[in-house]
Image (spheres, rainbow, N blue to C red):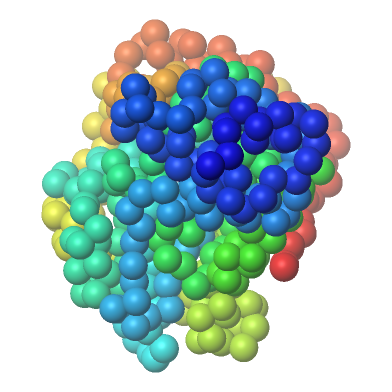
Length: 452
Ligand code: URA
């Protein structure tokens, strides 16, 4: 038995920790969550360990061992009985980023339609800060249950090839403790701790392939391009070392993705697309969803290149089979699919307002993070875990960067629960929208691809 203090001191002094040391420390962390009296590690020591990792970083081997120790710290999903290629995608979070809602049914449709079989066991998160969360969006569908136990998840996967759920209380308990502690110790931003946190939860889904959408630009979680790229490289090497084929795409998040940002609004946009109603403002969302799906289909050996995968994904979307899969998934999870017959009629915000261009010119840019905070202030997001969210609050985008605007043209429609919320969000948007006389450079949606 190695004393936790020795592990902390070794990390503090820059030594490379052994697998046994890391496993022992994480086991003690989990024990502290179950029974703090008997635990071998104190909260102060956990905090010190996190700060030592923050300062010293980790080798790729240490990071893979930390991720594995966290992944196996509680129950894990076992998909071996399904005899299927399990694949998922994860995004570092964005504004209006609803690709999961299109990708899960598209891949499920491909999994049902042709051999080899594919399944998407998608464990998603909730909105926090300026970014949205898949679970909050799904829960606007009456009856939709995101809290399924693992055995029920397996049943849904067997019948529909995709399941969209939240983390169970016993899945990766080490992350819950470490994440909570990071918040209070100034260690949230460590790319090593972010990587272990994200990858331990994704790998606990028992994946054979994983596609990571790492955002860059003003709405990204990481502060710089270099930081996003470094995180992407860490996550790819950690996935590959765990035996999961992993790719990361560095994708642009400098304006809301698609047409709507907000919980029900984003379901509505995806249902429209799956029903074949493609609004021009949704073009970037469709393109990114196809590209990410293309990589998933490529990993699953459905196609010979990711580009061929993107074309197949688009055909599944256009032909309506992805929509049939969507209906099956929603029904299997208890949701009422009748609301998709007229999604616009189900949208019932208390208040709305149009935000207009203050001058003529080209829409040159915006601070996308600020736009995300405006969506949160409208009621669609939360400040802290557990806060309620509004189903109908959010933002409709009427223009994309580079578009020519006349003075007074609509830029956004705001939806909220009160006029006060609209006032606050309007003031935030007024600070961030930039209209200029010159056409801004066109930036590609996918900037770089990081492979193992
Ligand atoms: N998402 C996670 O799950 N963990 C982090 O540390 C950051 C983002």
